[in-house]
Length: 134
Image (cartoon, rainbow, N blue to C red; front, side):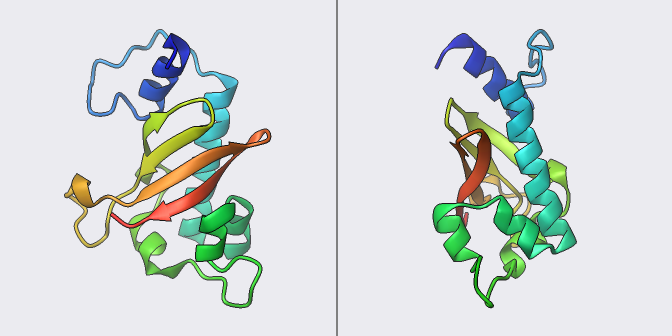
């Protein structure tokens, strides 16, 4: 991972528990696009807008949520875990993939059980391609 990506990774995850994250790195366009994708995803979940959510999904995540079918649904797993944009925290970011976690409504204080979102860059956009239970 090069220095710019390392800085972006730290910025995206809020220092990943380290309060000494550097303020020197400016927000890159890619970092902004990834954060915007996460915020849009969180908004779609918190507002219950399945059509908007499906716009931000690809691959297995799209199938899991039933996008494009009459069975499309958020389900309690997402609705109870993501209530606002800040609930999605990035833990790893590289050029084409980012891993984020959000609180597990069954055990919100247990980070080891935190569900995972896998974001992948598809063209110029970041989309959630996998949603994994903690």
